[in-house]
Image 1: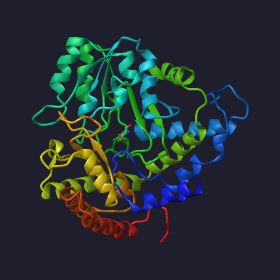
Image 2: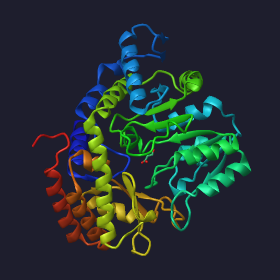
Image 3: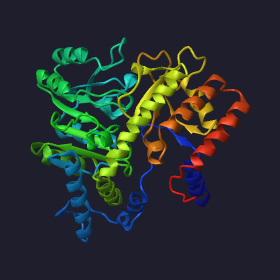
Image 4: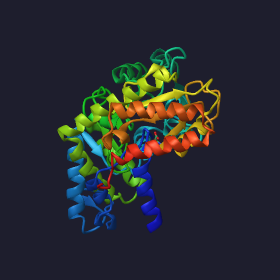
Length: 403
Ligand code: DSN
């Protein structure tokens, strides 16, 4: 364990992390997640627990709930879901019956497993109708989504994605849901940090339910969250506990409280602005190197590189980049001819590199290194040289180590 701990810390310091869903939590968040709160059972909710000795648990969960409501301007919150999938499950279980119809974004075009993929519980329990993106613009096809909603009359419309580089029009989804008499869930896991700081349009006024994870752009501990309107508070709370979970992970809820306080500070908004700026700079650098990006660019923290016609698939690309010190993940692109194990795309994001202080100049260098590696993925000397250059760069931007 000592070796794995030291090794992972070194890996996080030494690699350029472009995984769009990852970030580096602050030492305060890490301390809370590793604290004595891990020792306590606290089934129930503040003031209504099934165990004694919960007075500090109540304080922690109340603090976390108050802060998240302030951050997002929400009426009610539940911070007990262990993950984003469980947050979504809580919303589904709060009012859907098995066999009900839901309308969600196709995983192959940017959606998420828990939005009804056939190998996920959501795809097995519900009748899933999928919308996607327009083949020409690669932007969400709202017209098609509206048509499908009129035709299939879903009980729930899910708006949100894990690989969509553009702004999501939540009022438009509200209208689509209303026309079908459906409720709306906005799953904003990826863009929660941008929303909390007003840098992406706010889903809270449009959707009955908003779910997210706390460890992506929001830069907190691993975990999930549900926001909802007061009228659904009881149903959501019962769906989480005792519906799908037992004891909450109180150390994670404590760490969420710390992260929300950090996110309420003015510096956090400046950080999110830099995340977007860096993503645009990385997009420009890659376009300058001749790459095609899905939808032509990015409005948020991530972008998708289309590798078709470059003689390399997503898996080969991520492997070569890792050997050169750049960590990222392959991703399906819309209408991808390859399966998920290979893919024709790479998903790149800037939350983590921005946390360590990198800026637009560094994004330019990273874009150049990516181009060099992907044009000669089997060339040992090129990979070794780029690895040395990436190491030299990251040493100037320590994450946790003090140089
Ligand atoms: N696995 C996450 C991502 O990388 O986007 C989604 O839950």
